[in-house]
Image (cartoon, rainbow, N blue to C red):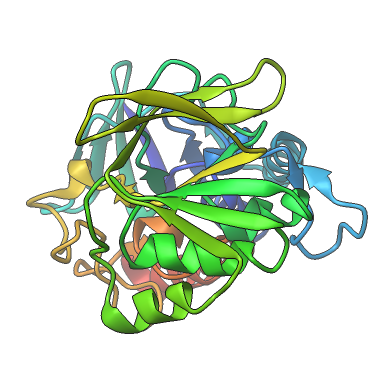
Length: 307
């Protein structure tokens, strides 16, 4: 059994930032890096909207730098994934396949995962024209043609944002109508750079090194055709990585952890950071900010006599 004052679950921008602040506060945090060390940025090529990098930085490089910074100040990053937690009885207990941890304080930064369609070339071309974040990657498609998959509000938001850069945005909708709210649908329909294909299901993405198009199927006739595109943006939702906490912490009806007063969970001594609770912004810089706040509150909690 390993005991620690502060255990951090997750190693994206939120988890690593929490580790940096906690380590600098001499809490010697342990970070369980989880099934996707570095979080979603490990799948992002150029990051140009993170402050301090005027020429941009590769997503994996940014995460590696954060990890090294946390370790420099005394954080321990352990390449293990939590498989079970108990936050009903203090100290909190977390299990992995290899170890049991006991912690006086816990920061949950397990993030959220974009929902994918899981067809043949999707993951191979992820970060090479396949994206689930227009805000992150839209800039790279200036003057190009892209497609957006989805018919809800998220798809409308993605499509509208992409019109700032792309030459043409085609929204591919599996159903025969949009399920987006009327106001979002009207905004998208009024934009002349957005076109529509209903009753259309994407069955594969095309390209070797970069995306060159998508293969689509007409859901009415079953006929498949190829259409050219430089980018494919999925907007079919995100899934928060919260299955560990069902029955342990309060979740909202979408499965995100609920918070009070910025980073406090439903259990004192358990703090929340990043996309595991953030369904609105989902940006590296906001996740890092939440990680900072969570670490500061954790240090205050421990200083108040809970250690």
